[in-house]
Length: 379
Ligand code: PMP
Image 1: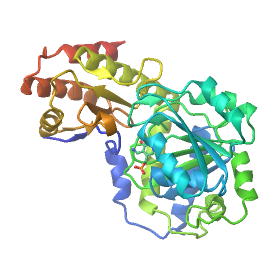
Image 2: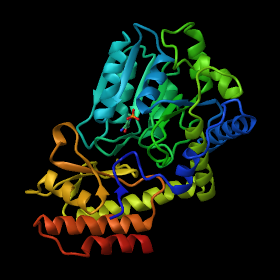
Image 3: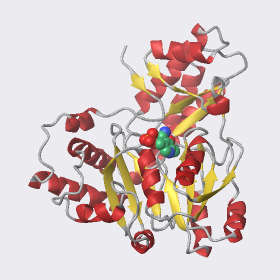
């Protein structure tokens, strides 16, 4: 059986992207590579409407989170963490280790913190930075990044950091318009590239903040060290991941070919189809209506479902999904539907879920969920 990787990252890597990773590796100073890298950085700024700087550095999403904090805050600063789950919470330890004062406002899992509550909190003291996780992968909740960005105009001293790891290239993100100061993401989710690259978009305001900090303790993740390389990739700071850069460039070519707005619309359509079909099959989408991500769904099991058995049956049939985190371990599964997947994948996944339910002895009418997906696809 062919395998289909439907976990919320890494997502399926298209053949043409894999081919870039299989190319013969060249020197990072190779003129053809330098040209490719330069074009990639320009494209990234245009696609995500950022008039500031774009960075592509070898690392993962977590490194992007650390990079955002390290370059905009100094020991003793206050940071406000808006958390909608496990990945929002990840900023807490990260900030505490750096000697920052981390204040957290969280929601129940499946809900968002109201923007008004964030505003009230920001009024309490001077925050050097605030973090918002665009899509928290543990809950499938999508934050109101644009609305929060608008409100942030009242707090010009606070750097607005958005973790887009499970969102960028699937959920609409316009860096300038949304007032985002640092957007960070990884290569392995909605870009559909293998894991290993961190991408960041940084406003002029955040670059000025970095400058004002002088020498920072972090070495590899310093914006000031990487900036000259992002301006002229023939220069050296630390060796770029040559083949991954090519892979990301191919992903960006695919995104441009599809059209980024079409890509956003496709994600929205696919999410509605999957969420509707899965609810028809008896699962409950954890995220409340109005704050549901389009990149993944977190499905709470109907009473009596054996998590290990259900996911084991799916895996036997070739569909990989992820389990629930923290309090939802064993009670939920997580399904990615982002990046370079297509309608064939959606139909297969729902059909396979129906078979797994059937084989697990759960009540299911074969074809019912597939019918729902089909209707959405024909709209
Ligand atoms: N933030 C979010 C929202 C994520 O989903 C993840 C990964 N699941 C991370 C950060 C961390 O990224 P990585 O695993 O690439 O370090």
